[in-house]
Amino acid sequence: MDSVASRYAIALLSLAREENCVKEYIHECEQVVDILDQNSDLEKILRDYGLTLNEKKETLDLCFKGKVSEYVLNFFYITIDNKRGNLFKSILLEFVRIGYKELNIKKGTIYSTIKLTEKEIKSIEKRTSEILHSTVILDNKLDEKLIGGFRIQVEDMIIDESIKKRLEDLKANLLKEGSN
Image (cartoon, rainbow, N blue to C red; front, top):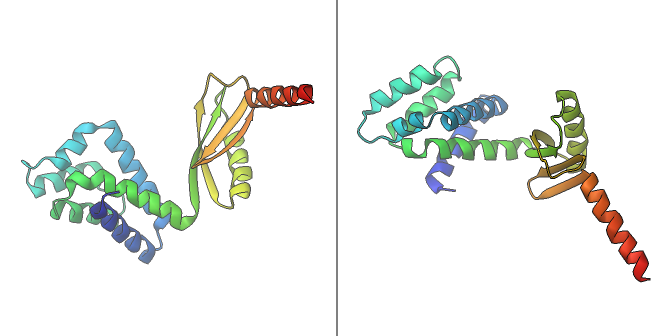
């Protein structure tokens, strides 16, 4: 991670701690990152060295005023004032990463053959959280390679409860018993 982006992210985390709003700021920054992902032109505007700082701040106002907290918006202005628009998204991503670490939250993915309901996801998140001793937030993605069941990936840990995995385990056990 860029050390400048990291320093800005740490500064925002410090502000979030002071305001006792770490979780809220994380949520706001994730929403802004989603908007940047969906609108590459906005990211280009923030990077554009031909635009004035005021033009960039006006753009931020149009997009985010009233949608993010005043402190977060002011942090965005500081980023622009210090000519760090090119690092804007990197700063937000780093803030989300270290904010999650601070709150002991881990994000992961649950792969399944069908779309899971919110209730099913929450139940699996609860069980996974107990296993990892962290709050786990899972995003459901479809995986056509699975025959049934599901596979969870959180950071470098995988919980595989798929039928494919069970069949592979059964095959390995049968081959092992056959060689004895």
